[in-house]
Length: 109
Length: 114
Image (cartoon, helix red, strand yellow):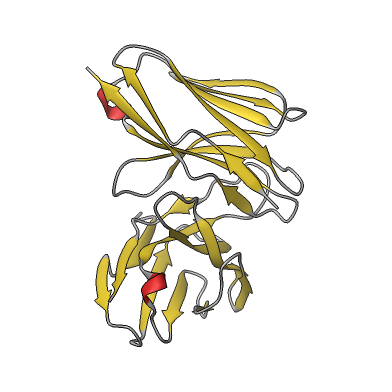
């Protein structure tokens, strides 16, 4: 079967750095996405990785290792508005997105 | 440019009742999707469409039907609602499928089936 694992919940302090991990086992791989979802709202796109390595976009970076089936999302200089769920999703061999359950990130002052 | 909109935002149904959820997008996207999101689980694909007049089953299609008569609209129908269909339903669209194609989501419809 297809499986994506992420921690259920993480807590971090405002101004700090947090790394959210995602491991996956899917039938094929055509890229990995990270989405942000604030409570009661729609998911919004954060990043896309298809090749190994780090993609940086402002305070957010995403890393991929295809051989390990592993990705992480790195958030720097945390702000209160970063409190949200972060969803990892893999595009499988049929070009369908397989979603993890999401990681709820709680930011404390 | 409204993006992706969904109607209604919230609905309460009794078991056995029927309803239709409407999704509309104004980005001229070819692909549209219906997902459900339940606590502790990832988004699950119900049905999707790769263009006007075409639909296909996703991971959890049972109990749902869809239609895409116009490119901008994607309807999700529940013919006989069951409590197991209590969920948050999200519609999404993308220009195409594959690669770095981002899916854009609507605000969601919260459905409670009693």
